[in-house]
Amino acid sequence: MEPDFKQKSIIDKAESYKIFLQQFTSLIEGETHEISVFANTCAALKEAFDFFWVGFYLVDNDTLILGPFQGSVACFSIRKGSGVCGTAWAEEHTIIVPDVDLFPGHIACSSLSRSEIVVPLIINGEVKGVLDIDSDRLNAFDEIDQKYLEETVRLLAETLYNNKK
Ligand code: SME
Picture 1 (cartoon, helix red, strand yellow):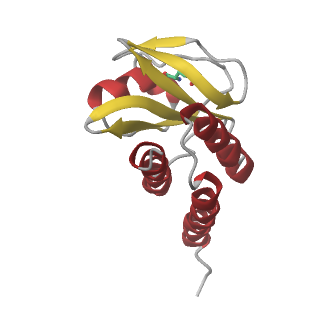
Picture 2 (tube, protein in one colour):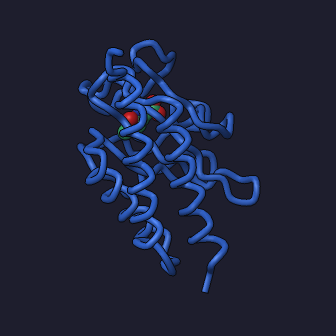
């Protein structure tokens, strides 16, 4: 039987995320300062997966404000409902964009960004911000990324907001 390379790459990605989540859990254990945890979350994701850009945009009234990130200079603020980030905020769910050129209203912070995933951080039913990850490859994100990045954000929320000292 021919080897199933696609299957192998899917298993490898899930395995990589599982290892990442183990390390991430111990990295942030007991930490309660939002900015520090967001900053190290970006650093850990960038180091583990070499994403082109990874960062947080944080809700401030009716706008998302650029938070901690790893990558090139990005836009400072995004209105609710604008771009991928503002849409994920308004719709309160993860958005995967296989080709940013095909997403109406996509905000291009870098012309090198080709695909994107945005995961909202929801605390007590309210969006506090979004985790935004860009790739310089088309179609870089799928349901495996969604599953494990949502788990990453869930862990972060549990650590930061349920374990307040
Ligand atoms: N592309 C995003 C803007 C943020 S940058 O990708 C860092 C969007 O459309 O919301």
